[in-house]
Image (cartoon, rainbow, N blue to C red; front, side):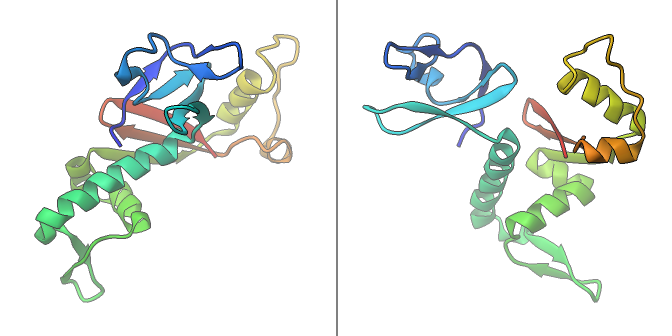
Length: 173
C-alpha cells in the first residue's frame, strides 16, 4: 500500500454511496481520505465502491512493516536482533518486534522512516482534551478534574505520535 493521505470532502451520489472529488482521477481512489478528522479508504470492487473508516495508525504501521518485509528479502543481513548473550541473531522481525525496535532504536527507526513517540499526558492536558473533544469548547463548562475523575470519564492518559514519510498522526489512548 502506498500511503497517500488526501484531505477533502467526500461526496455522495443519489444512492448514498460516497465518492471523492474529481472521481475520474484514479489517484483520488487509490489513497486514504481525511474528512472531518476521520480517515477513509475505498473498499469493494469497481461496481460496488464504498468508503470505510480506517484506523490510520494501523494503516501506517502496516505500510511501514510491509516495506520492511519486502526490503528484508533482499538484505537479510540488516535483519538483526540483540540476543541475551550480547550477540546478534538474524531473522525477520514480527510486526510487534518491528514496532518495539522503532520505539527504542533511533537508527532503526530512521532506517525505516517510522518514528513512534509515546508520552503520558499531564492532568492539565487531559482536562484540555476533555474540553476540546467532549465538552465542545463550552466556556461555561470548564473542567478542573483530578486524574480519578478523568479516569472515570475514560479520558486518554497517553499521547502517541506516529511519523511516517510526510504524515504525522497523533493518537490518544
